[in-house]
Length: 576
Image (cartoon, rainbow, N blue to C red; front, side, top):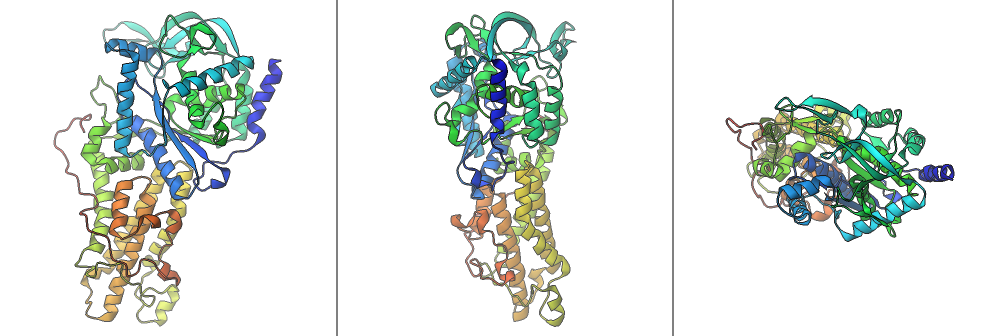
C-alpha cells in the first residue's frame, strides 16, 4: 500500500513543468514569493533584513515588469521550545513575548519599505487550521507512525541531529559539552515516544525531482549541496514532541499528549498564506522561497518530501543566500558585534543601507560588513557618481531653462559614418558605446534579477553611470560658448543624453532604492505613470521617434539626491 502511495506522491509534482524564476513570465499566472518566517527568540538583525530585502527587490521588479498578480509573504515563527524557554527567562508568557518581538519585525520591515502583501504569524488561527489539515493528510496517507525516538536535539536550532552531526567542545570554563558540528550550539540527548515521518521513503523521489528540475534550487553550489545530502542515509524524521516537554505549539490532532514539531508547523506557513486547505490552488505550486543557507535542509529536503506525502507539489524554486559577517567574524552577542539594522538606517539612511546590502550581498558566499566599507560604497556610487551626475545636469548654470532640452540629430547622428560627411556631428566612438551600453542595460538587469544576482544588476547600472560621467566629462558642456547656436545645440544634446541615461537608471533602481529613485525621477519630471519598464524607450529622438520628455520642465529641486556621509572616528565593529 505504501509503495503505491509513494508512487502517487512522487509523481504528482512531475505532472506539469514549472518555469525558472522570471519576472516577465506573467503567462504562468499568480505567484507566491516568500521569505522565511523569522524566529522570535530575539530582535531582528541584518541577516533577517537581507532576506526580506532580496524578496522585496524581486517583488518590486516583478511588478515593474508588468508581471501580473503576485503575493509576497513574510512573518514570524512563534512556536517551539526555544520560545517557551525565552519567554520564561524574560518572566512573561509566550503570547506576550511573541507579540512584542513579532511587532519589532513588523516595525523594522515597515521602516525598511518591505512591500509584503501578507505578514503571517504561526500563532494565528488560520495557520493552526492549515497545520492541522496538513497533519491529517499525512496521517491519512499512511506517512506517519509512532515510535520511541532517541537522539540528539539542539534547542537553539529546533532540530534533531544525527551522531555524525555532533561533536564535543569545551566551554569557556574548559568543561566539555556536546555541540552541533555545524553551528556550535549545545545539544542534549532526548528519549521520548513521538510521531515519525517516513522520510526515508522519499530519497529517490527527491533525487529525481532535483535531477529533472535543476533550477529548483539556486545558486548552483546549494543545489549540489542538497544532492550530496541525498546521497547519504536519509533517516525517518521525528515530527512531534512530548507535550509535557513542549506546551507552546500546536497539539497533534486527536492526540493531546503530543505537540507538532516546530519545523513542520513553520513550513506549512507557505501553504497558509496561499489559502490552504481550500483556496491554495491559484498560487501553489508557483511558489518561490528565499531562505538562508542555514535552513536549506529543512526547505530542500524535509519540505518537498512532506508536500509530496500530502499530495502536493514542491515549490517552483528555492533561492538561497549566505550570511553576513562583521569584519570577517560571525555576529555574536558575546563579541559585541551584532549589527542593529535600525541603527544602520539612522547611519546610512534606509535606501543607503538597502543599497549596500543588495550591492555587496552575493548569495553563494558570505558577505562582510563594516562601517567604512558601507560609507565608501554609498558615497562613491550614490552621492558622487549618481547624485553628482543629476546635480550637474539640472543645475541652472548648465541647464538655465530648467527643462529636458532638445536633441540634435545633426550633432549626434545615428549613422556613425555620417559624421564624416556632416560638419556638425560631434559624437565620438566612445559616446556611441555609451548609447549601446544603456540600450542593453534593461535586459542585463532583468537577466540578473531572474538569475537571483541582484548585485550583478547593480554592477551593470553603476558601470553605465560611470560611462555617463565619462561622457559629460569628455565634452565639458559648461565650457561651450552657447551664444553660438551650434554650440548651444551640442550642449543641449549632451544634457538630453545624460538626462535620458538618468531616467533609465532611476527606473531600473526602483526595486532596490525606491525613495532615491522616486526623488531622481521626480526631479526629471517623470510622472508616476511613466516609471514601469515598458516606458523606458531610451533616447527616442536618436532613433528618429518623438520624445515625450523633450521640452518638458524639470521637477522641483528638493536638494542633493544622496548627501555624502562623514566617516566616523574610532568606531568599534558593532557600532553603527
